[in-house]
Image (tube, rainbow, N blue to C red; front, side, top):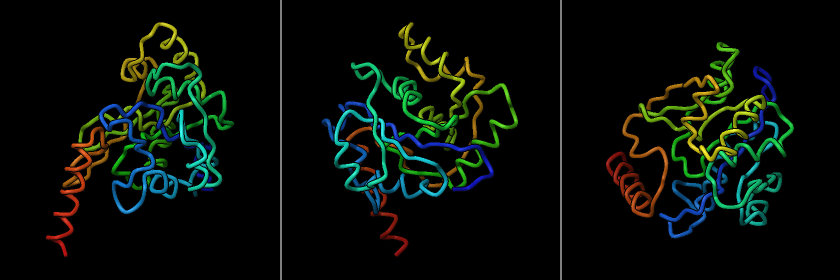
Length: 208
């Protein structure tokens, strides 16, 4: 594991219902050349201490694919969104920093973890830093400090589940990335998945 930043765990957020995907488990789908679980875990496994999946299903399948992966469910039932997945993480992880990433991400920037840590170091009072891609805010793709937990708990108690609203209270920073010709940074529906694969096939046909 690299040591230029504090010990960090990775949590893949896969705790939603995927209603617009007809309940399909996006983490087990193949958007690109690998299924999402492998694509994400292989990108980060040499950069983090432990990889976790926040999910309410398929834990045995995850471990068949990546034996060292740990899983946890939300502290409360009801599919309360990524904020609950983040709050619940601190009951399980040992590290004081967690990189959260949505399970349906299509593009993982190089050096993203290093750059997120550098951003936090520049602003000591900040408790979170999140990624923007081509100007779009990806709040669930973020690096969070353990000290953020009381704010997360208060937001959930008040049923204020917006990451944007919560992050404002955490002195949120951003790290911007650009990716030319990126069709979409995440897959939220079966239509988007079909369009993404069609665009990918088209690009390969004209480049080949």
